[in-house]
Amino acid sequence: MATIRSVIRGIGSYLPEKRVTNDDLSKLVDTSDEWIVQRTGIRARHQAAEGEFTSDLATKAAERALADAGLKGSDIDLIVLATSTPDNTFPATATTVQANIGMTGGAAFDVQAVCTGFVYGLSIADNFLRSGSAKHALVIGAETYSRILDWSDRTTCVLFGDGAGAVVVEATMNDGSIHDQGVLATKLRSDGRHKSKLYVDGGASTTGTVGKLRMDGKEVFKLAVGMVPQIIIDTMDDLGLPYDAVDWFVPHQANARIIHATAEKLGLPPEKVVLTVSEHANTSSASIPLALDTAVKDGRIKRGDLVLLEAMGGGFTWGASLIRW
Image (cartoon, rainbow, N blue to C red; front, side, top):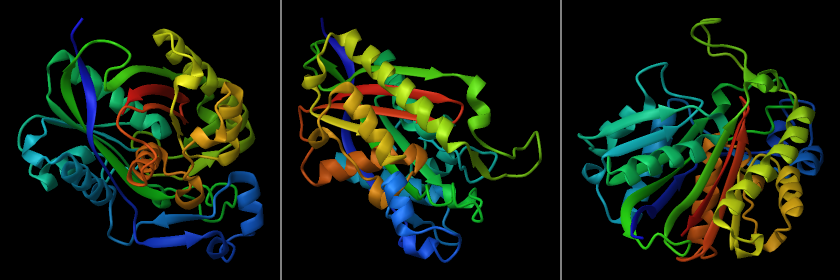
């Protein structure tokens, strides 16, 4: 039966110019390149310049995605921007991007699901497009985590970076089969009981401050390895697809050990895993579109490939999406 699918027509990303290596961080806190690489797989990360905001990163990624899709800002009627580090408490950072790209109609708003934000944003846009409420959507993940890190805490400041990634999604009629291009299935989950394991210790209604990121790394690792594979299993089972049907696994780039453990648990070979955490570190909601853009631009991901996305973030939130590229 013919149905509307949300097809990715363009993709783009942006990393700030400043690159910070593990050796650079060893001059700030008691750490080393060997210690960081062994535990996380991270070798470097990018950091926004003074006066460079989340909206700036998001705008540059959006402009590149629009160029890739052959569209203008005025062609877009929906922006869903995932971020944990907005420019302001309000208005939504998405509205700044809306103004920057010349989009004057439609709607633009932020979504806050921490590292799972891009998967949440893609699911929201997919529902808008399939309902007929929009034709072309920009889904963006953008973060300036360098602004909420405690630079004296060696257990967290080495893990995160700044960056942005974006996709242009178009409502397209398809046959309604698993061979269609576009978003085939998405599953989202959250569990607020785990808040204390990964959070920011500030907020408008609590402290009146922005606060700093706090994390119980061992607990996050343990829960991630347990929670993430199950939601992937549920997503694949809904479509009746075997795991070997997946061409590319593009996970949230938080920690190489978590990624490898998840892939191994699912029986996905290393050569099918897109891994960019070494250069980008954890860019939260930006990590999946950054990794996607890397793999598309270098020719790994091609039209027709089956791509599996997954992420887990503070809250806890987690989710998975299966896309025919």
